[in-house]
Length: 397
Image: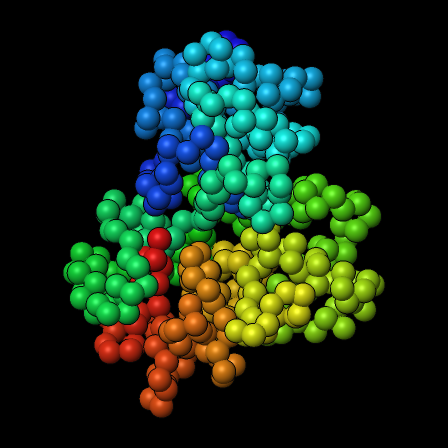
């Protein structure tokens, strides 16, 4: 146990989190079992360590961070370790990479039911199912999703600012005043392209080759997270990797409905398997999909997008990316955090929460004069009426 406390102290002392993540204030930390899900590279480990740093002295042994990648846990049960920790005075156990441990959900449920004086906060892959189809954790876990940096968080980081987040309703009703307040202090568009290229993942702060690191992360998501959690055999890895590349290549040019029949031929598997693989990629935060109001999985989606714009540049490094696809990917990724996003009646429309209709207008297109939809305008500083700067939707979290 002392070795774990020494590691905990070192990691907490040396953690760097130059911008406070909005999720930190959204979590109800009073719950006894909290799950932090997120894709690789978005900063889950840093998030846990930052929580410890902000709320506990490093000499306070009531809080402990552990990583289940440690070989120690190949021969020691999680419940046994948690019990020893609480008996020695521990109150808050922060568990990283929980899905690497066999029967992790059963172990967490045991701890929840039997150690009522212990609070557990754990992190894991976005592929993990916590509430929907995990009977072990039903009714006891409170799940949250950690995403990459929003444009707001990136802007705060790069400029030392402290801009707050806004709800969609606040933006729709007061976007001109909000944009004026922000642009009076700095020029958001001067940072927007950098964000689209590399601002979503905190790994850009490591001063290494960002695109190479992101490609490694995406490969690890497919090779480890999906295969492990979906219990797929290794022989199917080339098929799902090829499928992801084919879908990514299409979404970089013109996001559209996937041709499932052709994809099944291309990767030599059934249509049903193609759709299951697409869902795995979506669950892993490698893709976003768009359905009409009436449809849902297992039907094929109306459109597929890469999950964020940084992925587009990593996969397509020659930058030959459709501006429209880039802008729509940014818009959709910000909306899906806590909104229902469907395709509208027209091909280029987005229906948000079955209430608000949007079109995204890239810089090489003119505004649409004959539309009832809100227009998210690329490269616009301050909007008017139903024309809203696209960058401002990066302030939704």
